[in-house]
Image (cartoon, rainbow, N blue to C red; front, side, top):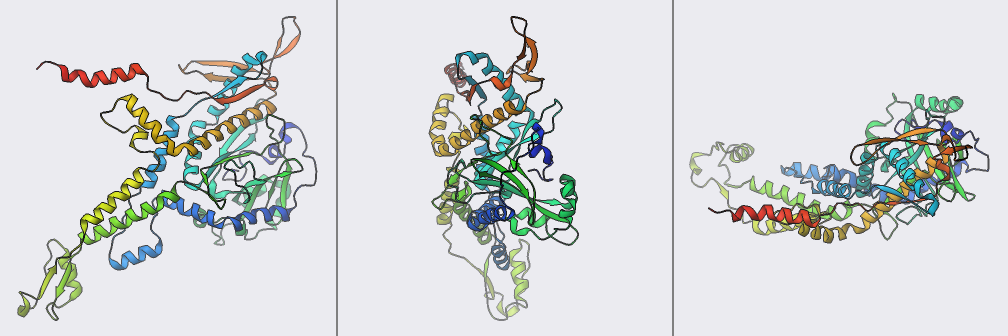
Amino acid sequence: MSDTGYASGSPALTSGAATGEAAPKKGYWSIERCKKSYLDYITNKIDEIEEQKDARRYYHGAQWTEEQLKILKARRQPPATRNRINRKIDSTVGLLERLRQDPKAFPRTPKHGEGAELATAVLRYVLDEQEWKAKSPEVARDGAIDGFGGIELELTQGDHGDPEVAFDVVEPDSFFYDPRSYRADFTDARYMGMGKWVDVDVATDMFPDKADEIEGSLADDSQFSTNPDREQKWFSFDGAKRLIRLVDIWYQHKGGWCWAIFTGSMILLEGESYLKDEKKKTACKYIMFSCNVDHDGDRYGFVRNMKPSQDSLNFKHSKLNHILSSKRLILTQGSVENVETARREWARPDGVVVVNAASVNEGAKADDQSFDFAGWAKLLEEDKLELDNFGPNQALIGDIKNQSGRAIQLLQQAGMAELGPYILGYRGWKVRVYRAVFCAVQNHWTAERWVRVTDDDGMAQFIQINGAGTDQNGFPTTVNALGSLDVDIILDEGADAVNAQADVYETLTQVLPSLRPP
């Protein structure tokens, strides 16, 4: 569900009308059950929700609370923020991009060998058309910060007589799920969904047949929100905004997946899932993954383990800066006219402190503070090392000088062990996305079309899909029929590697200059 509600697809498409089929009535969830499901998540996952808010603030550098800032201001102590969490998470996402692998289809039977190449070409076409290389790093960053990330698979209006397959990034602060779910891939979740604030005008355009009901049901639906920081800033009820809370929920019901779009008072639209998996069973449009799941079943990212060291680093920097820029004064009673003026002037490099004539020699002097700077500096260095060694370190990102390519590669393999569970979860999520996209293409691309595929050398070729042709006997047949393909989608193992020739060349370029005669 996009920011404007459901701008990527009309209700008709969402309900299954894109395929020409009416959504059958089979006793869907009531409005009370839909509302209770959302409220169960908000109630049972309050700790997880608050931790996500805190993690987003830390990533964006808002690492001091209002109470702490008030205390520092009263002390005249400047707050210091050395945001290493942001750099660590961004370097993790960059590492995943360096390890990017392309999807590839393999045939399940010998007679589907040529179809595997066709499936690979079609899948890569959809991914390129939907800007997969820009959206997948955003999902990886969401997983590292909020603890989970993913996409929602959609159908949009096409120009070939059938719908287009699209997907968009799920915003973690708008996502909710079955609080009993414990698995990292959400396969045990009975329901998932998203909630958005939408202008009433937009909602009535989306559901014109429900315009009167929407206008008559305006109320404060903030109970169906996790109240993230951005919503408190932009979606507050100040009397000038007419907003309505739209919730899109997908749930398992009678052996399949169903969906509903509802507000706080009514269901606007509902139906069966328009997506199917490899076994022709209905599937959920939300494809998610988690970074970590703790003993309570709460999902969390990297910030939880980095926050203590980050807080300690900020505190020590702020304290040391305050001590180094301050002096403690010893004044005798009546030695200066105004204590605050003397304090302010003493702190200035060119300050002038006026003292009474009777106390020129001993009326005012600075006190040499005995402070263990060496001990604090050591603790500060330990905090830095703790943050630097978390996740991608210098060895993992290859930022090491005077090392051969092979040596760097070995260090990277050792450093990647710490990110093993996260990388495996992220890769598994991508495989599930590839398979879901290809299944959607198989089920909904029925008309003839051409797709443009570009190879590694930049050469483009056009492939006909579901075209009309004749077989060897002259009978009509379908060329490259997607619906008849039977393939497996896996990741093509094509990660970057340093070969022996490149390693030798790098070593010689470093050694030969030292062997030149004087």
